[in-house]
Structures are given as structure tokens and as C-alpha cells.
Image 1 (cartoon, rainbow, N blue to C red):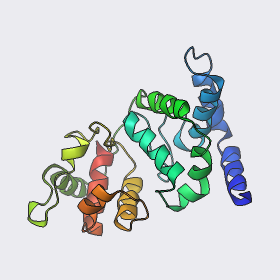
Image 2 (cartoon, one colour):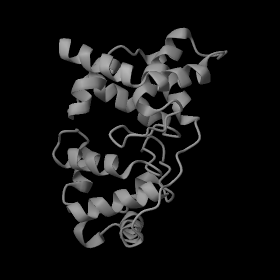
Image 3 (cartoon, rainbow, N blue to C red):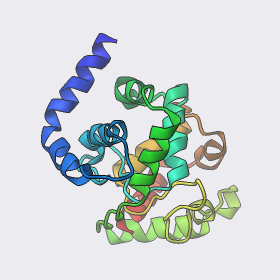
Length: 208
């Protein structure tokens, strides 16, 4: 508990400027409660004032599917995501959110403009695009687009991947492969992906 408190305090100090920006963006809201604004301000420390994080260690939340945001907060509360960042940061933060706050956060971030795509290695992106759109039928791997949409903007509660940090996407696929992050359906799809395939997929979705 002491370690968690120190980690959150350190992040809060480092993100003071981001908090100030976020408060400017959220003050005057006619629909959110002070508690909900406070939760958004806290999230902005790592995820950016409007959900576009600078560090690839933290996912971009802007324009993310609301149902997916709620599902991930619930996963942190249930401790079914076991990566280090979950232990050190998100378990404590998510544990303080009730259903109303989760919904408010999801609505706020899903309504923000999406992050722009970032260019990368053209050959790598082309490989990732082919994999995303076609999968590998011979290996029983379906197209990523089947669940994440042709434009990677997400479908239903399947997450938006377009514009997400490539490093974050790659790391999450690896966590799912290793069952550090429990996602049974996705595990079955990504378990046999090679490091090169993961890198290509991540580069492609970041470029969108």
C-alpha cells in the first residue's frame, strides 16, 4: 500500500501541468459532478488532458469505445490484468471508481477527437495492413478487422486500435500471449503470432 501511494504521488507531481490543463478543460461542466471531474483530472496525468497520452507506456483513450473503457476498469478492479502498470497504478485508482464514475469517464474519453496516425516504416506498415485485413487463414488466424473494424476504430465493445501507440499495442499482445492479461478469446487468436508479426500490426494501427 505504501509503495502504491508513493507511485501515485510521484505520478501526480510529474503530471502537475497536465492536471492544470485538464482542469481548464473540465471546469464549468454542467453534467459531471466534482467527483467525476476529479477522476478525469487524475486520469489526465498519464493519459493526457483529452485522452491523448504522450508516453507510449500509457494508452491513448481519446475516441476509445465506451464499453471497452468500462470493461478495462472492471478488469483492473477484478485484478484480471496483471501487468506491472496495473499492479503499481491502476489497481488503486480503479478501486476507487463506482459505476457512475466509470460511465462518466467512458463517455468523456469516447467523445474526444481521436489521435492522429503517425507514420512509420512503409514496408512494415504494409505488412501489418495485409495481416490486419486478411489474417492468416492457413494458421487459423482471422483478420483483426473482423472485430476491430476495417478502419480499426473498433466495433461494439471491441477496442479502437487506430492511432494507438505501437509500443503499447505490441506490449498488450505479448501480455495476452503470456496470460498476464486474461483475455481468453484474444489469447486464442494471438497466441501464435511471431514478434515480427506483432511489430507489423502495431506499426500499421499506429499509422491510421
